[in-house]
Amino acid sequence: MATTKELIEEYRKRREKILQMGGPEAIEQRHKGGQWTARERLDYFFDKGTFQELGMFVKHRTTAFGMDKRDIPAEGVITGFGKVNGRYVVAFAEDYMALAGTFGESHGRKEVRAVELAKEMGWPLVGMNDSGGARLQEGMDTLEAYGWLFRNQILASGIIPQIALLMGPCLGGQAYHPIMQDFLIQTRKTGFMGIAGPAFVKTQLGEEISLEELSGWKAHAVKSGQTHIVAQDDKDALDKAKDLLAFLPSNNKEKPPRIECNDDPERAIPELDDVIPDKTTQPYDMYPVIKAVVDNGYFFETMKDYARTVITGFARFNGRPVGIWANQPAWASGTIDCNAADKGARFIRFCDLFNIPVVTLQDCPGYMIGSQQEWSGILRHGAKLLYAWADATIPLISIMMRKSYAGAHYGMLDKGIGADFVFAWPTARITIVGAETAASVIFAREIRESPNPEETRAKRIKEYSELYENPYHSAARGYTDDIIMPSDTRRVINKALDALANKTVARPWRKYSNINM
Image 1: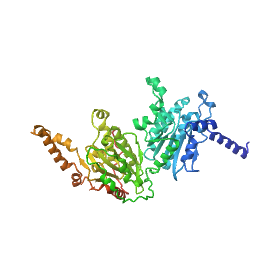
Image 2 (image 1 turned 135 degrees about the vertical axis):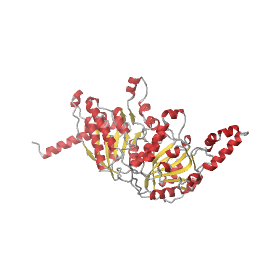
Image 3 (image 1 turned 90 degrees about the horizontal axis):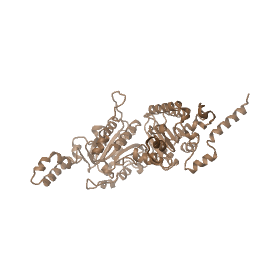
Image 4 (image 1 turned 180 degrees about the vertical axis):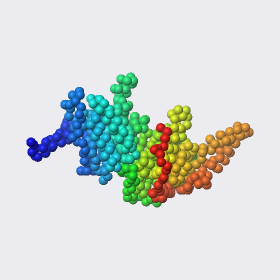
């Protein structure tokens, strides 16, 4: 029978073997490729000395295809909990050096346990994805494990924030669990995600395409809209995850963490009084406006490279985290197309799930029209924004800066769809359609039969514009709460947020709205 000393020595040997991962040479090769190991990522991410690993000694039970002779350290994934900036977080980091971080039954069980722990404790979940995909040697055990993970992630959705870090390959079924998390951060050179890799695509479809083109950051941050944030490397990805977590509550029962603010909440911004061009069709950049009104000019943008006619991200007002949803007049006049509607609706619903107020800065001529948008389902996609606003129970504040026309008037948030407060600048044009469009419809016959059609047209456009294309008609009806000087915007938003700090909403019971998908 072994002595206590021998048992402890055996424990130390077993533990050290697992901690060695792929060995010094494999670690050196990884560093040469610009990547950290799974354990290095966790060491950097968590506050020093706070990470507690779970399941280090878990092993697979497969014997087929020589697997009985394969020793896979920690089953290719390291799981545990600790503190990030002083707050508890659960994380898992896939280890590409352990059988390529392949996903099998026990690997899956460890990730499921991480999700369950995060949900039970009310702590955010961060997944660091770096895997060669499904462990095919385990057959149905691998396949079934995916189902366990997917279901548990979905059941935790809306209870805890979930962040995925795409730091290596993530292909096939393996790509579904990061895509279902709330935010996806992808490294620029080493992160790849796809339902199938280039070899499989070539075999099945005959299409020749590189891994980078098919599954790299441009494929998802620019084209597909599945990546929210692009990072330069592992360190940058982990830093961005920390920054994002700082805006979020730990769970859906908490308010987002408020911090000390050294930026005067009453601060006037004189430069905003001149930001709107005199010509209504002239573009301008919304980013300086956002940075001028928020605390210390700090704006954490999400989906920066996708659907660039609109802007989403997080900022603070007097230390309070707030979601920003804004048009970008510098891109296609800030119109809302199918992709922009999806981008906004998901962002709004996330903020609503986690008690984060939303402020809109709007200058939108409307939803995008034309055959391609119609055939792509602009009505269906546009309706997602309406569902998001009407369902929301968080504080909602709308700032109308210039154009607010037609359906986009509601897609960008108006009192009728659920805004608590609506404020307009004197430059706002709040009406059903622009004066030129209205005149071409209402007065078409009169203009056509007039002795001087151009003169009649100009007269009618001017008449309609003066009557309706301004903020005063809406304010007269009570649809706009106040018309404010642009320079007072920060002060007004902070006062509104103070007033709405304890907002509560009671609704009839239902499972959820049947949102257009």
